[in-house]
Image 1 (spheres, one colour):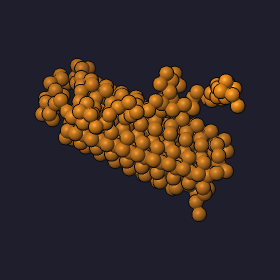
Image 2: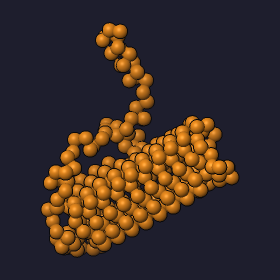
Image 3: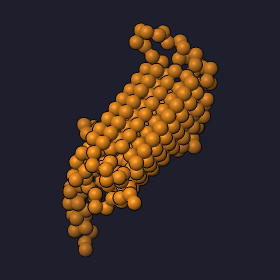
Image 4: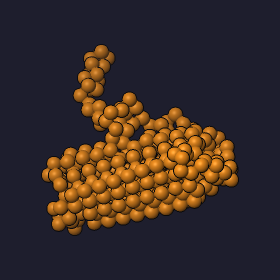
Length: 270
């Protein structure tokens, strides 16, 4: 086959690909995670705490930490409520019990961060890098999340009403959506969450509460949903290849399971 003919076939194939199935750009490819930019802090805990406390309460203002380097610090228990943490570096930072309610964490870096028991109610996490973050017992209720949480631990976390769906209006960087590949969501509460087109491939969802959530076109390939509550959950076009499903009685309470993809390839409980 000539080069020109081969190129023509590739070009035609590219046109046939659904652009909405594209994945977001891998930000890690062009970033050195071992560089000082990603591993050091330009402030101490005392300085961060002083900044947070210097903002007057009740006048609508919030702390501005835009772009700050705060990696490897102990910031546990601090209150960042409503703060601007756009592009902040918090890699491997101890954030246990910290409060980020309504905070802006867009494009922030929290790789390997410890957010155990943290509160992120209605926080904005757009394009946020949170691979392997620890969020056991954290509260992300009502948060907007198109973050990469691959390998993250969210055991017992609360994501009720959270929106992890794909942003179909802005795809200049690919499909921005919640990515929970191989994430641990055992006993997590995702009731009423929007998981449309979210990536839950190989996620652990045992005993998770998925009641009334949207799983429209979500990728659940290889996921473990054993004993999960799927009452009212919408499985329209969800990919269930090799997924371990809950009991037949539980599945009977789900919606549009017959419209799921690869249902015949799903695994049934013994």
